[in-house]
Each structure stands twice: as structure tokens, then as C-alpha cells.
Length: 418
Image (cartoon, rainbow, N blue to C red; front, side, top):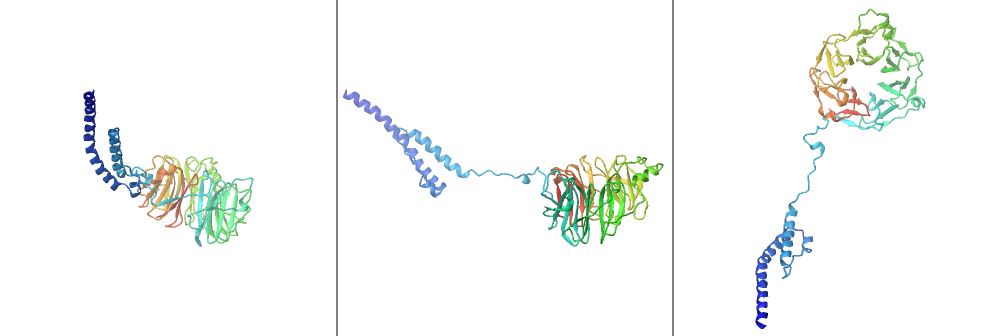
């Protein structure tokens, strides 16, 4: 029995020695790893660090756990925080507008902006008009806008659409639909409502301040009136409306002009007082110069119907057709000879053109189309950054070579930065 017990103890001693011999090398490695771990971890964590000791019963498990902890601690400082790329920094996204910035307005999203004007004596003071009885005012050049309340224009029975605003000195005018006329003589600090005749032919669509207590007004039926006494009396500048002129001259040879009962789709005035207007169906256009008794109709020189027309900075005409076509008249003055210019409108209609100078102009249209020319309109480049604007851009207004705006629907207003 003593021999067997001795053998049993000898057998038990061999594994014990083997275990001790097997465990000793990792203990030397653990001290080295512990020293490395102390260098990697901050001081606050060094005090809390517990190095596992090997025991006779769980040395193998603790060794594996120690190695896993040591590896995790060594790798953790090398893990960098994720880098997030903002949409503006992504290469596949469109860049921000370089020459325009959007100005956000305190109005309902469904408002369509229609006209803008600034007081000549105070270029930082201006007014912005739109549908749903919208009148906004700025006193910092158009950077910020606030709603302007005019008691005489707040009628519970009407929801006015303010179409046009104009200033000459401190004299200002606003017109709208249903028929409303507002006048100011103190740069818009106060406004008075001017009564209008019930026999006014058509709806007022445009007004131009021409001097002290003087203005020129146009209706969508072609009536042109002038006043020199603050709007209390108006004198007709043409002898009859466009409908009367066209129906009287049925043999004029103008396609679509016979028995004309429509209205103007657009009307634009040149700096020297000439007008060009497009019929509501876009099948012909009309012109008028000061001193002429009637509007002069013209056949369109293109197959597609006309969308809009206006005046270039050099005195010539530009013409837009439905579907995105752009034409320029040959030479200056009124003519029926036009040539097409290639533009990248992506199939969306171009709705307006505004000239900043004789060489630089901008065209705007549906679905955020914004085009630029620097050679008087011979070639155009699309500003792809404007493609992200989810709105139709209806009007381009340059008040001078450094101040310009683009007006659109859903309350979209772009300000020119240069």
C-alpha cells in the first residue's frame, strides 16, 4: 500500500511539474505584455489594470483570456473614428451655386413671386411681390425680408395677386388683381390706395414709375395709360385695345390674329419706352413704340409657339419658344428675323432672360434651369448647381450690374452674388 501510494503521488507529481514547466514561459511573456500595455493605456487606466495570475487549476484559461485582453488593448488605440463625408464634399454631388444664393422668405411655400423693385434713393430698401396677397420688404439690400402690412390692401373679400412694383426717386407704385392700385411718395413708408374706374379694359399687369406723380400702366388687353397727377386721372396712350385692332384688320395677314379675343401672356418694356408682348396662345407677338396709335402685330418666325419675349441690352430682341428654344433677333430694334441659339435646357421650358450687361445675361426656366452667357447670348452654359432647386424660375431681374434676383414659385428667391 505504501508503494502504491507513492506511485500515486509520483504520478500526480509529474503532471504538476509539467504544468509548472508549461506555465513558466507565458509568465515571462505576460510581464513584457503588461509593460507594453502600461505604455499604451492612459494613467487613469493603469491603476485599474489587473494582470491575471496563473494558478494550478485555471492557468490555461487565464492565459488565453490574458492574451485576448492584451491584444484588444494593443489594437484599440489604433482604431480611428469614422470619417463622415458631408453631401457638399462628395465629388458626385452638384456644387453649390457659385454666383447666386438662395434667400429664404417668411411666406407660405405655395406663393409665386412676381416682381421686385428697390428705392433708387435708398438701394438697400426694396419690395417683393407675389400671389396670395404677398408684400415683403427689405432694408438690407435683399439679404433678409419681412412681411409688410398695408391696411388699404387688406380686403377680406379678395386675395390679391400683386403683379408689378416700380419706383422713381421716392415715388412708388404697386398694382394687382383684382384691380388695385397703391401709391407712395415717401419711399414706401406709407401707401395710399388710388380708386380705379370700373371700365378699365383688362387686368393691370405692368406699371412703370416715370417721374414725380407720373406713371405708365399696361393691361393684359393692350391698354396703355399714363398719369401725371398721382393716378387720379389717366390718359390713354393707344386708341384701342389689341382685340379691337386685330378684329378690325382681319386681312392683316397675321396668323391667328383674326377675331382675336385673347389677352397678353407676357409684356416687357425697354428702357426707352418700347413694348413687346406675346399673345396668350403664343401664335404671334405685338410691338408698340411711343407715338404709335395702335399695337403692331407680327408673325412668329419659328414653328413652335412663343413663350416669352424681351429686350436685350443692345436694343435687340430675345425670343423663347415652348420646349426650351432660345432665339435672338438679327441686329437691333423691332424685327421678324430671328436665329436660334443652342442651349442646354434639358427639355424644360425657358421662361425669362435678364441682361446684366451687353455681354452677360442669365436665363431661367422650369425645374431650376439656370443658364449663363458671357458673349451677348451667342453661347450658353448651364449652371448645374441650380438643378437641385425644386422650383420653376419665372423671372430674372437685374436692377444694376451688381444687384440681381431670380424669382420662382414656392417662394424661391435667388440673389446675385457676382
